[in-house]
Amino acid sequence: MKNETENKIRVFIADDHPIYRKGLREVIEDDAELVIVGEADDGEAAFEQIQSLAPEVAVLDIGMPKMNGFAVAEEVRALKIPAKIIFLTMYKERDAFNRALDLGVKGYLLKDSAANEIVGGIKAVAGGGHYISPAISSFLVNRLAQADLLVVAHPGLQTLTPTENRILRLIAEKKTSKEIADGLFVSPRTVDNHRANICQKLDLRGGNALLKFALEHKSELS
Image (cartoon, rainbow, N blue to C red; front, side, top):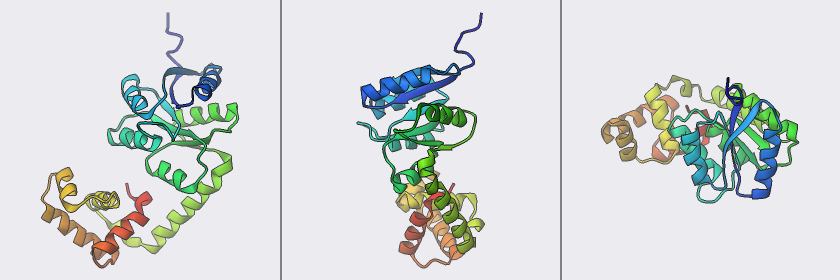
């Protein structure tokens, strides 16, 4: 006899407000295709359980104690944990939305979303897609338009080697040459040579210009 949860989408939830978390659990469990495999009331516990429980989708609040949602998403991405993350939050700011997408978050839902929207978002993300609350869909349109402008304005970005692209992303994270070298297992001199090549390809003059460019184009770096 098959386990009744075998074919269901495994969902993990984390929110530091117990009443809201209880309501969210009821919404998810009311759908026959979804099953809750765990929950947490802070980011640190959420990250630990995402690793141990291996949910397909993790629905996280952003403003949690110990580790916020951004920190959890960053760790999940760094460790290549396969769980797909959805933020379910009150934050309607463009900066929060863009940071979420930069961290590989697959869904961004507002806490005032209807129950069917939350369930639909979970299913869309579990199926390999993305889901953005309609109320903030303009953020995505603007982000995509800006990305198109960046490609047109800076064709040199497309000429970077994978190593140069990675170094530029680490520069955007404000890593020093030594920190980058340690992470890539090369010498600081090798990193400096790559930095010089990046500057030449992007027509940049000096370290400050390189850092400014990296920060402005962080979302375009893989």
